[in-house]
Image (cartoon, rainbow, N blue to C red):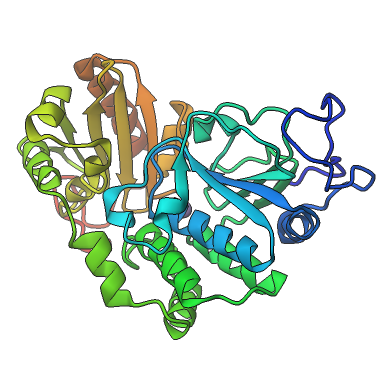
Length: 364
Ligand SMILES: [Mn+2]
């Protein structure tokens, strides 16, 4: 973990009314890590809680739980997202509390950024010059903020928020447990991804003990899809291609229009490509309205897709990453396939021999 030392909470170039009140004293610099975050939370009164654009289950669940924790402490919290909360997460307690905005206005003692490797990841304007707290668990996480708590071991940022809540002495209510469980469930791929360790199950046990309803949450998240998502999945699957250990599929902007799909309906489609036996890495390419191409990358664990995504301006985890490329779709496809082929070449060959053969040793 990288830590920036002795960075004052008050920026030298801050005029005083550029978006923050004076409740956090400038005299002493904050620590880093969990204790640094605790310090900011204890001292401040008004907070904005934000995460990355196109928030996922972990982002939404963790934002909501963070807000509830601050409520308990008698603090003010505004939950702000550049994109709307996906439909499947709108059943989470207080989900409507997350306000959609393109810009963060108002005075805050600190802005909490969950799962962002920089302010631009939030796609929110108005973050510059504010006291920033960065809480992240991605391998591409960077210490860009005033206080940085990055835990690569955490399987979800929800796990970190759970720890924070305990540390600050807040009670994890059934509502908070539900939100954190949703984050844990989705970020571990329903407890399937690598990194799903005993801690993940201990946390799940703890959260269920505190009132999270696993079946109810699973129903909301996995069995409440809009029809458009299924129709889009059909379009994507008709474009599924495989070349040895690599599989890819795509959806065009026309597919999106034809099926009436929303951006969030693309979530999870790439998992059907990585679900093919013997495939080690998979890509979903989605043509955006402006003809740029959004990529979702998946790996079964032998290939670090976060590194590939980061090289192309994105980020993520060992197993899951994303980035955006210039169009047209055909060119973006060639770019990512060339990169992936090269990466797969340098990868240690699987024990099962030829790349065309399913590798039974891999957990899929
Ligand atoms: Mn996460």
